Length: 261
Ligand SMILES: C[S@@+](CC[C@H](N)C(=O)[O-])C[C@H]1O[C@@H](n2cnc3c(N)ncnc32)[C@H](O)[C@@H]1O
Image (tube, rainbow, N blue to C red):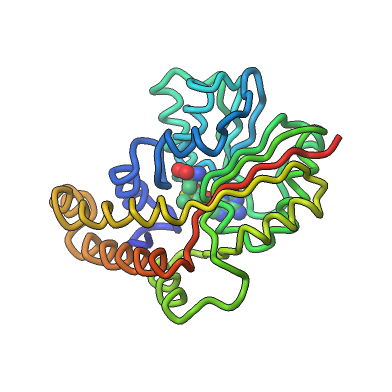
């Protein structure tokens, strides 16, 4: 949610989103949603790349609860990397994590260097999904897994006026595509065993509750954190988001696939 801040994810934005979604999280669902993204996968001893890691909430959970060996988190926003690094110190997880700022574009990692790629609600900021999936395939070891959640759209037609209005109000670079586009991009990049999961119904219900919290019990906390104007502005954006979730055009979802050997 864009509020008066530095960059797309500045200090106010980070403080606000963490207070809605939990320490270390800039996307909804907390650890339960991460558990669903990786459900049934064996992460023990794996090296994982988290693309668009934000403040590191997912990285810490994959290490602590899923037995991953090391998580490298990359993000384009220096302030979220600073926050992730500070949390790693706080949690005593500095040896098991590496957090780095990267430029948008090809991933700065060697071919076949990671066991797994994870991402939570960050790919929406990256326009070329086909190039992204090709690059993920390059960085993964043969047989490696990609497991991601993202904010998507019902299809790849031009967005409706209501959706355009919502995206404009967010003030973020948002390039949401359909789950089907991911299916095709994954297949073209050499991934197999592709599974897609639509999460619209879940997030629609949750976002309604979030609006009720923004307007009710948590209102004063948010006003104290970001000021009255920004609290009003963010509540308005959240209501628009509920509108496009209800319309069925905004469709959070998960996908996972295995790179062919
Ligand atoms: C909605 S936040 C999610 C952060 C984190 N994955 C989480 O779930 O808390 C999206 C993140 O993607 C990052 N991002 C945007 N464009 C990116 C890019 N090209 N490469 C890597 N990260 C990017 C943003 O800076 C932001 O931290």
